[in-house]
Length: 332
Image 1 (tube, rainbow, N blue to C red):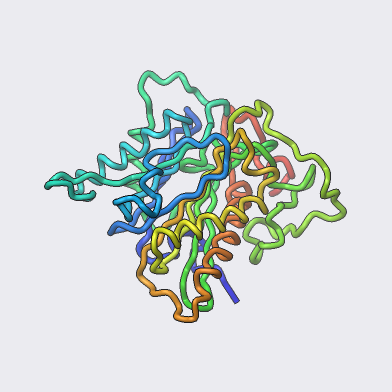
Image 2 (cartoon, rainbow, N blue to C red; image 1 turned 60 degrees about the vertical axis):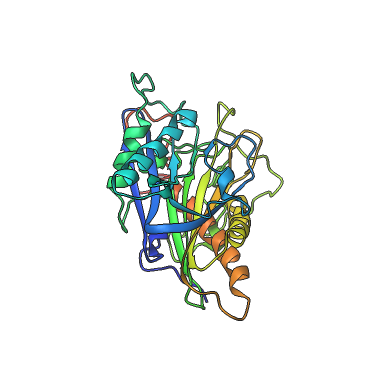
């Protein structure tokens, strides 16, 4: 049996911290994941329109095998500057890859398109570097989900999106967690019902306990986001297992199954869907050889649950272009 960790957050993995910062006038924000020491990281991209920073170096054949932080941000291409704010903060703290005595923090990042969500985008200066540094300063083991951080301005086809997280503890004692910005072109609920596509994997009532949708047509066309141009769901799955970069890449790849279970459709030409993987390496793999298989399975389960939780916990704000799940379905 697998069970959620005590927080049901990615920070149930010892040593990981998450920080959020947001600008509610702009309806956007940034989220950072980091640890006290560098960690192994990888990425797998399945969407047709990704926006990324420093992801090429996450391939297993590249020189740098570990990173100092991972950043998720709103703002489309402008939001890539959030990672610069994080890198500045880490450098000031003495963190980074040593190149001839110069510290260069390794901070890959990814962005979502949230420029058409009703926020004031007429900024005189790009706000994302500031948001990235503020998110770094706020990093802690406990953090809110829903309308916060990089999920502040997220939207999906017919509802507000949000920032979600979930965790699982494996029978081997390893912990797996997911952190996701849900900003999809498609839906996370079934048709016009409040039931989440991820319902079969729900644990307890972590996103309402509504169960699977009854009597639905699996061939029915899903709803699409109104402007149907750019979207993107970006995620991080993490573990305390000791993984190589190749093994972390495999975990990121497997986690995409969770995205496909929770969003319909996912991985479209207009979505930049991607999954980072992070491995702190504090717990050796089980000698049985089963752990890598279970890590991928748990990562997919965590990601699907985190997606539903991010939308379920979204809250309303002035100027929203879409209702929250709570408001649309009159949840008290």
